[in-house]
Length: 337
Length: 167
Image 1 (cartoon, chains in turn orange, red):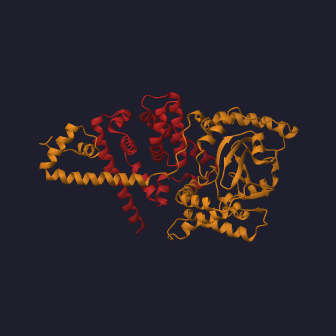
Image 2 (cartoon, chains in turn blue, brown; image 1 turned 180 degrees about the vertical axis):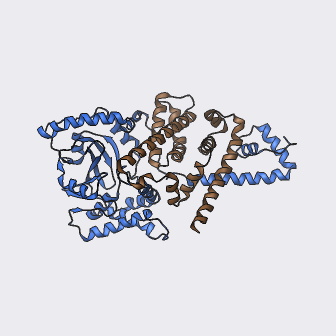
Image 3 (cartoon, chains in turn green, purple; image 1 turned 180 degrees about the horizontal axis):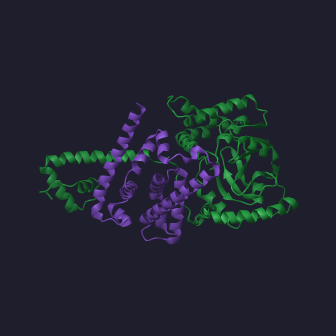
């Protein structure tokens, strides 16, 4: 070893502390007498730390490690409806057949899915350590992927700030701000639930477009709402809409929304249009503040119409023009037991 | 329950999330998959939990990427919105962030080099990386040196390319 130069692989293993003691001594001996290899050691050391730095840039935001409680953990099956599309379509057909009876007679055709309850518990347990700052979003097919990504990265950047603000927030509920958050926020569908559970969660009948098959009902989460239920309905075999029912909760959301908006406004003008979305969010907040009585208003950032009934906020999203969504929104009716 | 798995969870969870994040590029998805890997470990009670977790995680990330690709195709059919078809590379260039550049640089590595680099960065030893990838232990150093060099080169090249493009 001390005679021949040290190859790159050995050098990296040496610097990584992964050489056997005897080999490492061999490298040491060679370095002691070879200035060229000593210089290379410094180069490789710099390379290793540079690569480490770069990788550190590609790191998800640090979050609290959720508690590990063996009793709670069961294998997740929540992906089954995503993975097994054919099965999901079959279920749709069955639900569609049942739905006529359900709406017509008012009987409870939609029962709890047997798999739903454990999943629900599990996902709740797994996210037990969540802070309110851990925003969740709904993956809506109608939203461009680019926008989603930009929003997500924006969110990653501002999450810590928001967390602090939330912690410090005093309960002074500005309902207009709550609407704005809702418009911009994306809730994540957590688990499929039955209509009875949806009713319990919302404290009211969930709203849906009458005469349209309900494909599934999901529980979801969104900041500022004590309960979010998403009713997925099939308009035809390829088009699905989602009716989101959100029960608002008194929280100082003005703080949250405006905090999120502040950072990018102060940034350089070179930011892309998508990155400026939070600025639009701030504009929504102010425009809503100017007309708090508006009951049906188009969302200025996401093109999602919204309707308020009691303490429920309802909106519809789907791959349709916004005026169609508006019309559907006017049609929604409570799903009666 | 195996006490040592709780310990592995404490010491490895973050690294596993980071490892997964660099494959699925979505923090929540990475967390979900990490949770699922641990849930599976509880059932399978593998001999060497840490290495096992990373193997399972790598498989899940691969399946997840396939599913995502499938869904993208599906969505493209459904909505026909032009943004939906934007390729990953274009997106990465649009979102001017270091993260996107590192991601692009990582994607220029060969799958094997990338895997070894990510595993090392997750805290696995040469021994564990060799066991996981099927490479000889003696080849890990060489693979790592190449992976690191290419990562840095690709990153710098990406940066220069952007400057040139901006004029």
